[in-house]
Length: 115
Length: 111
Image (cartoon, rainbow over all chains, first blue to last red; front, side, top):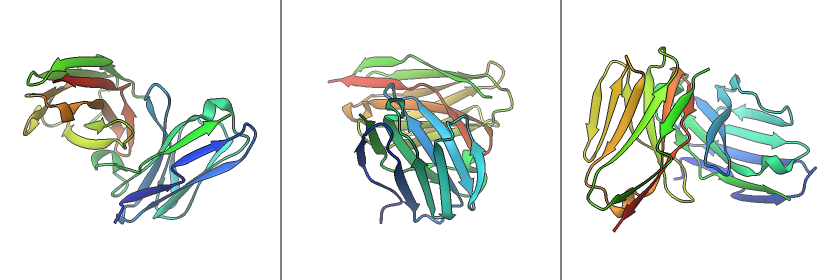
């Protein structure tokens, strides 16, 4: 009965590799997000999709590419991983397009370590 | 874009005392201000939120106040307990679907 789930929970990989993180929500929400939380705990929005349409695309290297196959899923693919990509990546979802005025439900996070 | 500043970055309080965290925002068009709590190794979770047409909101031991003129809002936790130890994030929404988070406050409640 998990609301927002992410896989994998931990990801350790070498520089230059390509990796993907998957996110699924079973809340029936229309809006999904990817956040990056760095080592200083700062939470920053990366992308947001509403009904499979990209609505937020922050200043993120184009090595990061989100993909939403349907409104319950939002995946994040990262090419040519760099040391600075090491962080915890959180997926979140909220009801409707007005995501900011509705609670955002976060997934458990994926801790990415690039060596 | 919206810029949210949060103070203090760390806060240590004796169990039973109150804790106050303050945030300021830059854009007067912001209309939604949630607070999230993140326990160690866990996901952020909403604990309380306030909209721009309200000055104060309470939920048991937690309260949030908003001063739109000064563009600042605060989280108040009364009668702190060990389970209140966590990182607290304020956020502001200039558009309905985008949150700008503060840098977080690590609260430690001493027994």
